[in-house]
Image 1: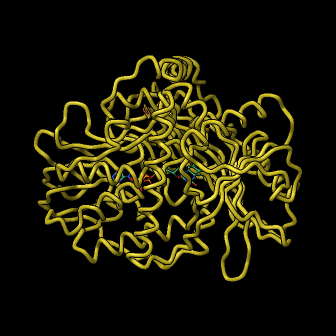
Image 2 (image 1 turned 60 degrees about the horizontal axis):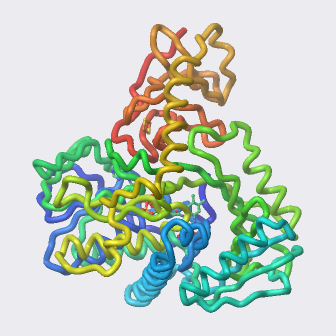
Image 3 (image 1 turned 180 degrees about the vertical axis):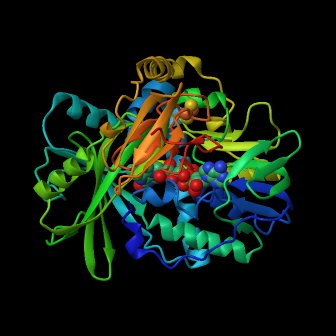
Length: 499
Ligand SMILES: Cc1cc2nc3c(=O)[nH]c(=O)nc-3n(C[C@H](O)[C@H](O)[C@H](O)COP(=O)(O)OP(=O)(O)OC[C@H]3O[C@@H](n4cnc5c(N)ncnc54)[C@H](O)[C@@H]3O)c2cc1C
Ligand code: FES
């Protein structure tokens, strides 16, 4: 399931697998927008920098994003204002605005061909639902308070009815995959070593050693630019992992949604993208907690129906999904890891992480260089905010406990192996353990331990993406058991399938 960016992406450079021992000043784990921005800021400072990526550059959250860059938050500034007050709303908008400027400058400086354009952002209510109207009013007030210039619009910029709308000029869009490919190329020319297909399996902070399957790196500074920190971290109890889906289609109409559209029906994000004189539109939505989704593709069917009901289109071309981690107190966690002076993380970006990731790259590089950063204190990963986090923390941890107890007690015994159809997976009790069993399209069975190596929850079958997803902290595993996302450092253990 590839995101739409595949069609417009420049042929990416390929980077080697790490197979030999390295000494470096800084090791950055993860080559998404956070890791590469951090590396870019450290290149040419005299520090030796290495970036180690489990997959390939941009293949994580960055390459699955929608490529929208905005200074507000998709979930709204008004809820943030209610929780944190006016000052933080101004700081969020100002810091995010300068991060967008930073991306624009990098695009220019490195000549990155990623279709960066300044575009307006619209928040649109499609009906007069009182809750939505009040929400838009509160958003309007919070945006004005943050110094943004807001226009109230009366005509729908989309080919469907609108009741009310707000417009903010000066936001931006780009092709996120081309941007990070461009950054990777620029920094590798400036001496940063990048390694792909090299999952990190162990991080030893005391010794300053990072291990992959076939090599290790000895370093002074370690950066987790992995979307959520790897291994065990208290922060995992503060993050709600969820999945969201996207579909795209070629459009056959003069009405293109030229901008960023947050549509307040059940919430959809819409944007267009041009490639070789063809106009595409993408619709994103259908969010649910990781490990608890539907198994029958209804998420894609719903998005396709939505697109078909609202646009004149010729054909659907791509469908994909992506993960996000929402922080308990509504702000991202960026900075030093608790108890560590030379280890850093950046997480809790919700669906706004292209901009947060860029800001995180600025903050973490300043921390490594010992320079003041004006935004660090507001987003410090070591903050303790029990009152502001309480509600989400309680919800998230109730859900983890439910997963642990319900799954362990409720897993059915495998009576008939035939009950697993072709192309299907199932978690069952067999031979005294919990197994994740999959039958491929040829009828061949494979089995893995169903116990997530992160903190022992049981994985769930994800029939939409053919993966094993852990509902506790969002680790996801492919059919071979290899980690494709989330905090787990290790794959699911292989087992013999029961006969
Ligand atoms: C559907 C959807 C749409 C979105 N659209 C937008 C948008 O329009 N605008 C916006 O601002 N945000 C958007 N987001 C959020 C955004 O995608 C992310 O927040 C952002 O890409 C995070 O960047 P990152 O560099 O921190 O993480 P990633 O891009 O995920 O990079 C982390 C990297 O770490 C690697 N890694 C993980 N484990 C290891 C390991 N053990 N060893 C080595 N490497 C490892 C991964 O392979 C990955 O490449 C969207 C999110 C979703 C779900
Ligand atoms: S992701 Fe934490 S237990 Fe699975």
